[in-house]
Image (cartoon, rainbow, N blue to C red; front, side, top):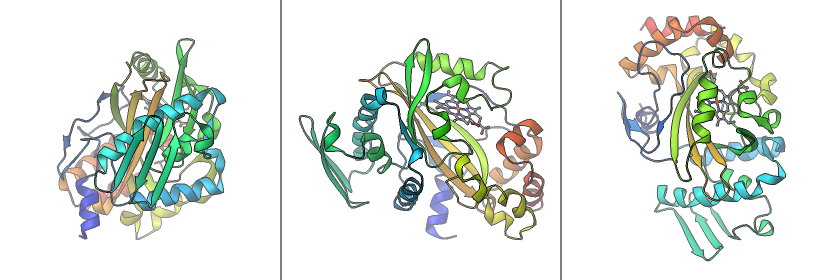
Length: 323
Ligand code: HEM
């Protein structure tokens, strides 16, 4: 195993605590380190790994091809500044040797040697950051970002920069209520999961940070599985079944999602950091191999369908259990 590969396994946020998986309002306080069978994750809000520069280059390319991945309703500009000024200091703490943030009043100078970025801007002054604070933030962190406004007793997904969506679309969802955004998800409405989640999020106090995980599967290390590019990746779900490279091409895709109440705008900042690990990598940890095979085999059909696993889940279970 190469170093990059073993570090990927060691840091992977394997999400299953038991042999079966159902939706729940699974939130916990952020920044609590988690130990896994291979290593651990979760000590910070931002997680910068060996794929940092490559993933940000991929985001730039996706945005250049399709600027609609970045959305911001006009009243959300203050929330975008709020997100940037909350998360840049966080990134500086995460990368102490290779980034620096100097603040003189509202005049901020940010240097990021990992990316070769050096920018000076004035907080709140749109002319000083022409691409906008949300786009700039998205050029520095691997996470996708959604900003939710709270009004009329509900949360509204009124801004976001999302290039790595797992089969949904920021351009489609912008301006929707939290409950509407979750419209396509099976089971959660009857079970009250989304309603409880929204109530929980609306009670978050300024500065409070929580997190949860979500998972699906992806063919290849492809992060851009937005609805917009379905024609590029959808058929691979069928074609991969007969591909001898199936264990290298099929990946468990885990999102570590953070939920943070921003202090100035009162918006809820939703961060989605996507990790992918091939079945072959995953199988290097025997506990993960057995557990993921069990979860996949037991998953109800409606959930497997929604997650887009139906075509290949039998082949994945066969490979995981035949080893
Ligand atoms: C999907 C729950 C927060 C946006 C889902 C799914 C669940 C869920 C169970 C289905 C995932 C799957 O099977 O792959 C929750 C809970 C939350 C939360 C419990 C908070 C505690 C958020 C927030 C946003 C969001 C803040 C921001 C708008 C989405 C989107 C999808 C999704 C866009 C995909 C829906 C589609 O298929 O179009 N969520 N979620 N979620 N969630 Fe959340």
